[in-house]
Structures are given as structure tokens and as C-alpha cells.
Image 1 (cartoon, one colour):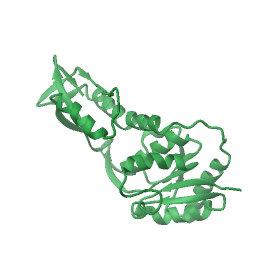
Image 2 (cartoon, one colour):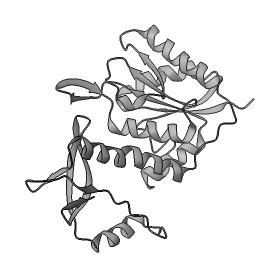
Image 3 (tube, rainbow, N blue to C red):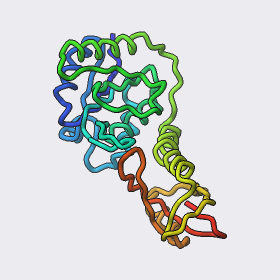
Length: 247
């Protein structure tokens, strides 16, 4: 019987945990570990667009596990907390959107501060100082995957990318504007604001060039802001119209 394919996303610092998880899982699944040191020899090709490759990977695997350990220290509501890196959260959202919540899990260190947005995701927490705790968390995920139905509907990559775009860009912008009663630009507070999402009638092969051509026709100023306790340099283009700041 052909085993279902399982993807483990891991940073180099977490590789020992990924290898340990693979030992537990490989009896029931065909396991592939990805980390930044081996990405070109595992499932990615170095001469291709990373995001495009990552979207293709979500089509090649039946299950996904993202490892979250205490990589970053950030300030959250006045206190220093440990939080997984943004790229891990991005990949988690991508795989969850593609595979579904019963086929994707976040294997996470108990020391990590979780954002409130994680409600509904499959989480398995472990104590990095307790080997039995880690084994138990991996087994929990294994049992979840083995019991998941085979007839779940998955999103196509385009829909998954749109979902990730909403969650990682549109939602943070809207929350920031609401929580801060608008946006301050050049020492002036703009309480009226508007978010514009440009969707071309046709997508060209070189999307970046197409976007730059559209952008060149609009006079804008690039701004950034802090979100979730860390700088989010997401290059938001703005302009002022009728005392309203438009993003």
C-alpha cells in the first residue's frame, strides 16, 4: 500500500526535532523534511520562484506539519515574549488553507506566545526539555492525520494564495487602522481611510513588472507600521484624496 506523503517544515535550528518526528511518523507516512539548508535538493529548485514552488509543494503532499520553536523575542503588550518567525506562520497558513485543518498541524514549543488568530488550528504543544512530551505531541498529530477523511475539499493554489494575502496583509492593515483611529502621515492624523485592492483584468507572466507599470501611473508614498509587536515592512503605498488616506 502506498503511503500518503507528509511534509515537515523546519528551520535549521529545529532540524533535530524534525528528524525525531520523522522517525515516529515514517512507519505510516512518506515523510519529507524541508529546511533552508536542503531546500534545493528536497522539494524546491533553486532557480525558480520560492512562492511558486511553495504553492506547488502544497499540491504534492497529503499532510503538513510546521515546527514552531522560540526563534524570535518580540514585545507584546509591554512584555517580552517568544514567538515563531513570520515565515513559519506564513507557511502554516498556506498549508492549512490548501490541506484543511485536519491535515495540517502546528507542532509548537510551549514557551511560545500564540496569537489569538490560532483558534481552530490543529496545535500540538511540547516541552523541549522533555523528550516524552515531544513524542506524545507527534503521536497526537499522527493519530489526527490517520483519522482524517479522504474526501476533504482542498483549495486550488490561487485561492490559497488569496486567502494568505487577506490574512497576512489586508487583515493587519485594517486592524491597525481601526485600533489607531486612522493613520498619521507627515504629523497629520487621517481619520478617514480607504483600502484599495487592484486586480488586473489579465495577469501577465511577469506579475512584478505588470504591477510596477500600474504603480507608476499613481503618485504614492510608501509607509510602514508595527503590527503584533514587531515592524512589518510591507510597503503599503498611500495617497491623499479629499482628506482621506488611501492605501
